[in-house]
Length: 121
Image (cartoon, rainbow, N blue to C red; front, side, top):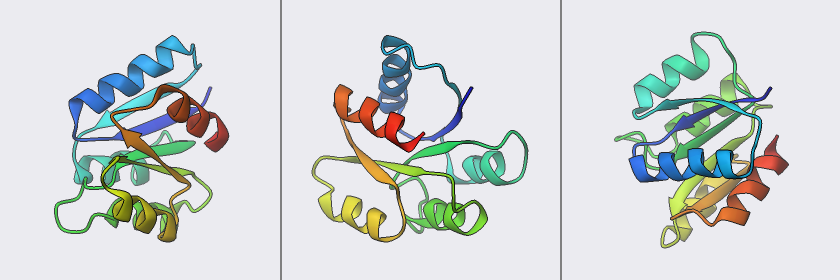
């Protein structure tokens, strides 16, 4: 069963993701972190390893792409999907340039979210 790390500081986005997993009956396990440091400790310093990371582009206070860059260095084969509001097109574009697999706009668009997750896995 695939295991996903959700690194997201917006509770409504987390709820929407979890609701989407349930509605679509996606057979996934997931952990949720609401801070950059917690996400780093979960993703890179302790088992279990994740098959995908979904993260808010603005999770780290200092550098928006710090977790993405860390993921690329430590586990480059693990897809990294960024969440960003529809108005953050520049951040989404830059995340793709920095190595993100794809991005999901918030508020979540159900079919886009499911499609991106299934494609990443």
